[in-house]
Amino acid sequence: MHLKGKSAIVTGAGRGIGRDIALLLAKEGASVIVNDPGVGRGGEATTERPADDVVAEIKAAGGKAQANYDSVSDYQKAGAMVRQCVEDYGKIDILVNVAGMLREKMIWNMSEDDFDAVVNVHLKGHWNMSHHAIKYMRQAGYGRIINFSSDAFKGSVGQCNYSAAKAGIIGLTRSIAKECAKFGITANAICPAADTRMMMNDAVIANQKRKLEAGLITQEQYDRFFAGRGPEHIAPLIAYLALDQADIINGHLFHVEKGRINTYMFGDDYKSLFNDGSLFTIDELIERIPTTIMVGLTPVVPAVKMQDAVKSGEMKKAS
Image (cartoon, rainbow, N blue to C red; front, side, top):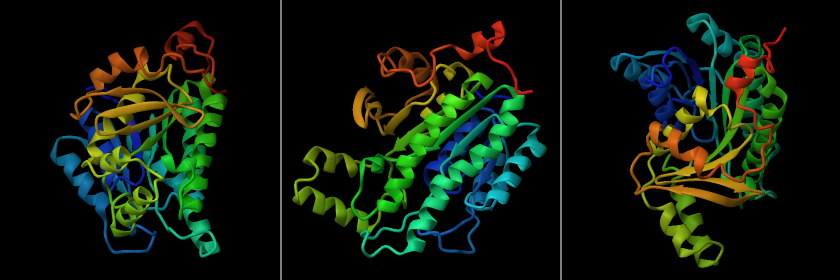
């Protein structure tokens, strides 16, 4: 097990990408707080409790997990969620911010509430969770934060609220990396592509067709969008970034989907790592990522291997 003895929070973990991440982290030995308020795609209240199902699945497989039903947009409840992890498992090593929602409208039709609700869950939610978790991580001299952005950071028609929040998450992540590296904490951001209720519905499908017909995307991009990209293909990269030996990767942005992982350079694809469409394994990523897609990237923080720096006394725990 690659994460034995670690404790983690995964937000938005009741369905889709978050669910597969929680399952894999638990399989690799981490104790997991599975957060999901059970809301609809647009943040509307429901009576569903998908977090319970994921917790049951983890426990049935012999893992450790507890459910949490609060919204990451609530500052106080975000703090309580972090405390739950520390109280139940003794610490918080890993924070994976996946929780999100969508309210798609053109900017002239978008209400203030549509904008605020999306920004509060995505950008403020990421800040809330990171703010509270880092207080404990600093004291421990260790932490892994993995934030979920989106390729929508480049701009997305009908999603100005979502695009703005996702671009903000990249800036937030790079700032955390710079502020917290000396405490043994890394922060990286992910732009995933997977078939989930966030990505695939009638409106999204129709929008992709319009983009193809208007020449805004290529046939190759269109075909890849509908190639059956399961959320399970996202989880291995997250587990890899949560490892001790991923400490040299800090402040970076990755795109990940079935059979493909790539880094970015100023918003454009930089270097890519491919396979035949099978699941990447954690061991494979340990071997291949440092010698392929990370080569040539300008470090966001000084490229000091944290484990070595902690041993030599260059990095210190918070006083």
